Image 1 (cartoon, one colour):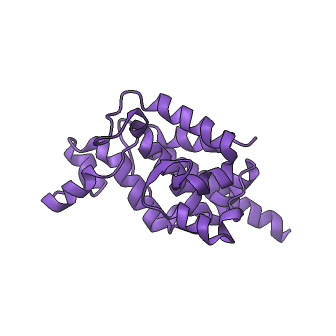
Image 2: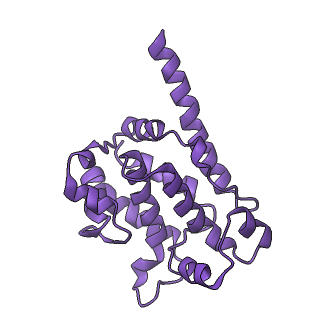
Length: 198
């Protein structure tokens, strides 16, 4: 009886995480993620039920360093090696192709090439794996994800305030360095992640 109850609680938390991403992805009225609502064990179980085992990271200091990297470059640099270790090269390539397709109308980053357009979605993938593997706190995950989404709403004062976007010169400069994700794409990115290993 006890395991059944804990499963019910876990399922409710998983729904809450998906619902948060759904609300975050509402193009007309996005709602920031709340770290209090994120059950890391539930996110991890969600990934595991989709065939994605993040435990490979927990016992490998090199992969821990990789997934904690502040940058995503490619499958061999930054977050890339840890993502490939968890998803396999095929899963990585499928997600990357999807992210590129979703980001066609996004600007390239600095002196980056076409692939830099999807860097925000690739960071979202890496940070979701980092969260599920215990290498990122829910607070950091929410802060970074909210900035990636909120950045697209800088011209909307109400949304900017709700997402706590910086208004000072230093904060605005830092926000420019953060890779954004296309409006409405967080929930689709999560669904794509869950489809990679089935």
